[in-house]
Image 1 (tube, rainbow, N blue to C red):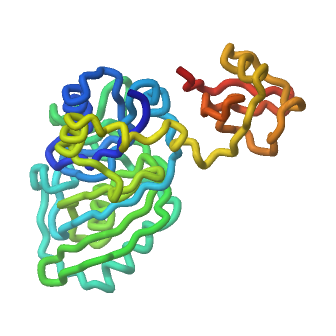
Image 2: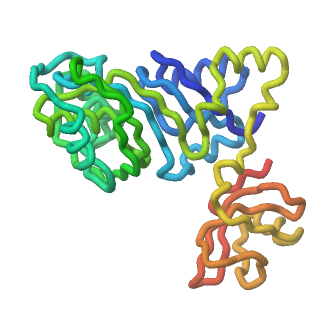
Image 3: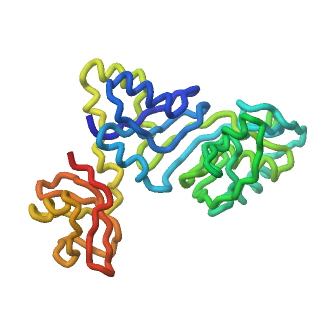
Length: 297
């Protein structure tokens, strides 16, 4: 079984819990995922099966969207409602005040990853240190927030909902935390749903129970997406029979002898039978096309 299925991750599961569950359902070990979700989050989790696991780390950096619930007036050590309360505040925040501060977080911004995160510093995951009560200095990282919209806000309770489109590596709970800090009252995330990730959407996602039922009915193959979906944004390059043989053997191809090469530096490669076989990089100063990663079986 090779390809991609989009899972609607349930609340309370880690991303690895989902993989472990699927290994039991599908009776296969070669399964991976892209885009880790915190246990409290639900929504889109792309899962890669069999040969498709080679593509786990090849999804693009952007095109993720979320709905995030928040509460102002407190901070926690995890920046969400699962953590230990560190401070509280009675400062009132109006709808317009929130909007004004929120707008400062749109575009390319710097973000310091939270201590309770999987970011690695000197070979240690930050959450491993945080669980021991250790906090260390973290370097800020550039992230891109393409859209940040206040969808709901309750002035009395200081609760609301944000819609966010952002780049890979963005911590949504940190956005809420940082907005709260700038407002002077603090803020925590109380819920998170990933709506989309790299072309995969919640509408097309399966629950684990649905995967189990479809597997029992021998119908799961109908819902498995081809590996090339990950690379549908790349220009396509079609090889002839001899070029296909050379590509599969890892031989660099002469760019001047290929049809369909333009100024792009990366391509989705199809063999003479029009089947997807991998990705390749164009090295223009050497007029060569080199294999990036192959996916043929």
